[in-house]
Image (tube, rainbow, N blue to C red; front, side, top):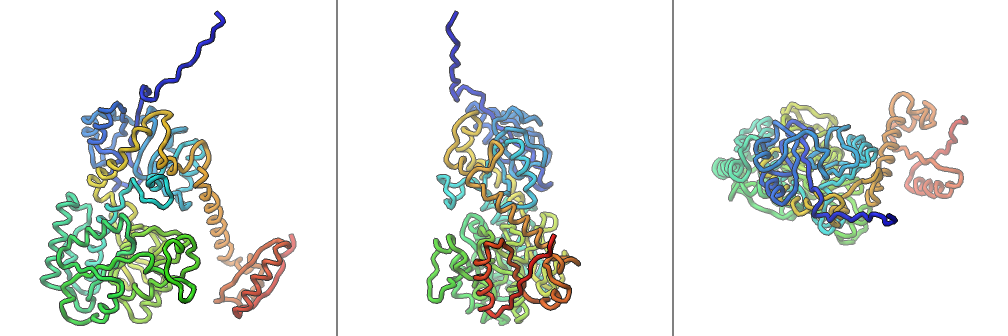
Length: 523
């Protein structure tokens, strides 16, 4: 009568294991899935229940998933972990659940901050595929990614765009025979066949002397780069790899007739080609560059860009690093008479990023625009002056079946733990956990600070624009007119910061700048 019941822990292997698959809502073109019917079948046979939301646009039909043993249902509340490819609709997250998807929040991207707020409010555990890295390291290789398919798809579209741009400039080329990636049944046979045929045409008929030698520069050496190079190599024997040191020699042939008209030259560049040490005589050190990028200055615009016909950025970039190509650099290049750069296929779709002229993302429906650095304007009409830009943010979605199969295979080793309630997460999944229990994980706490800094910067920009700019700078109208066209440095601080402010002003004066101290108006 006095004995107490003792709760016996339930072994993890006897618990109900379950996974949910979201219907993608990000774009009408998003037809990928994190799991294929084949992988669902393997999971079901191992005792995992798989719940799949119905979708009429997914590349795999509901019937295929049902035949593999999945339960087709809109209600995923019974799943221990819910997976999608891209971000779910705002307001649709289930409280307290585990979610996996590409969240695009780790750079505090403004458009996704409402989603992050919802994650925190609903105490969701968010695991981002982008952060699943070998051993849970910060710089080790990514393990679950679509990268190579972004490279393949983007390169096909990039070559097509190059053909369209050359047509706008008055030249019909074999690249016009290349269709949009999504028009091909698959990449491995159908798209490669089209690329091979285009390469054979280049070898036979050649390219216009005015835009030869045609040089494709792939910037970066990771997964996306490998996919892009696979597509380029599919052009066949017409492709010739060259080192950055050979580019000037090729440019010397520009506008002349010769064998170079029957080639597509491909140059792969890395960080050592993007920047040089700011210290005279210092050698490039990769580890130092990534640890202290402020010790390096850009050089790509001087040494590589002047020789390139099609630029293909594939590497990671954030605002700590110098841009690969700024708008000012592109404007100066073209103003000098060098108009060799015809197109940029930014396979990272990093708007206002490494290539500053990518001022907006593009869509699978309308993948291109032309940016004119002289007027700082962009237009959908491909016939205008400037450089053609490609910036589609869901390039692998154009190869949905192959990309999904590759992705699911990479994800498979992590699924048992994700399906099991209370199971410990691997080092890889733990390190990829952005938030849980209503708070950012310590490794991602910087997102809050980065977000605040971005919001302050936006507020400052708003404050410095419009009719009240002079008032907000505490300048009179006459003073504002006097400094028009100059770089204005505003230093704000507390009285106790005066030593630091004075030191900064000494630097300004030593560089030939003028200083004027003003106290803010009393309030």
